[in-house]
Length: 525
Image (cartoon, rainbow, N blue to C red; front, side, top):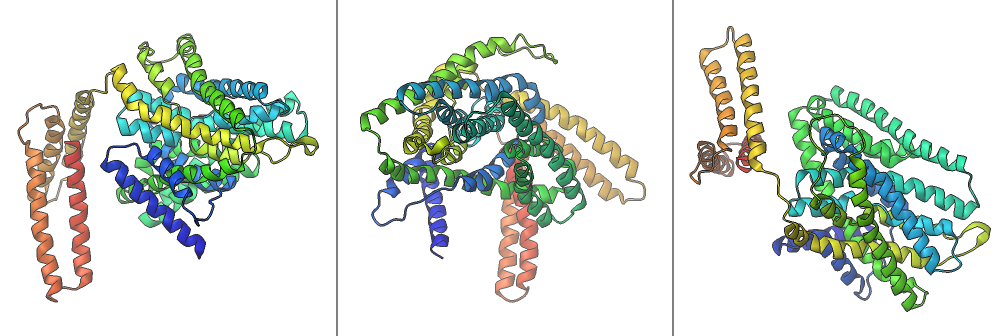
């Protein structure tokens, strides 16, 4: 029971701090870390300890799954070159740079465990990147690259961590063993990801109950990760592939009601888990600092060196990578990105998060031959990298974006494309209506024709620049007033005993659904 109240308390803190951060326009992840650190200093509070398996199996899979579901597969495929250069090449370069830096500064520690630390701090995090990038409204292509990088780089880092830990705890490993681990992790993860998409895609087609659809969606990331990890494949890679494939086909796999429920469910889960992760980072910091036994000056020097290498390596790597990417042939008509402001902004968006937490806690207690090393220092370095990148880069990213003056996505381009597509869709809908209207009352057919015309008109209205109220906005405003009046009548009838609570709930649900659709129409108008 005490554990239950601890969880309730953590959720309450996340809700309260997030509300305050939103009220004052602050970045929620950073405020949660600071709040966690402040709460950890309160006398009498229990120490919060994170298990690496809890993060890797319980927190990371659903976060990666929902991020993959929301990622555009065509956009991901189009930006595959920069994504792979960052997700594979940059992770390896950063891991080696950090590993050799720590090896030079902390005497007596084997290179293998230093490289393991490099793998821990190398991957930027999808949670941190998405939370900050979407908050400040970065251009869509940059967000796609950051999200794609963060979805794949976890697998690269965890494979390197596995190999480095094996070398540090079991002695030397051969090149063949390293190659086999890499092939098994990446290839196996890809295979299990495809199988997971096939199996759960089939199940979603068979299920018609929205509640069952949501239950399957919740089960998917854990089932895929569990199956992949059972054979030592990359569970991270598997869940990302499954999410990408299912998200691409989601409109044909589920009913509209299932998709609406699933979107609301995953938005809540994602928001809550992200908040808990950053809060727990802050809560862990005090205990990690207390466990440090290394000289304070050494800790400060090594911390500054690791943080500096992590930030600078990204810039040193990203500019040559941009030009190397142009040498690789590609299909399509769009030209490669030549604006130097794009890699500059991507270089500054390297915040660390949940993967670094789990990987740091998974560092071995002892090395080969029962040798020891300053594990507390290494865990501190990982957490300091998370906090440092969030504070240094996360807080300055909005100002950095403004300084670069990178042009934002033009909403009129999207509006024009939507209007043209909606026009074609309306024509297809009218043709299908005429093909199936035989024997149907003329009033019904006329209503459907008007509805189709309204949908097309709303899309074209978004291209207008007038400040006057458009017909669609007027419709939404007036219809919401009408729904409010209907709702009051039903509630009065329930209170006076003329209708039952069940009748009210049924009517209320219909009105809520219509009001939700009106709100969406208003937001997109």
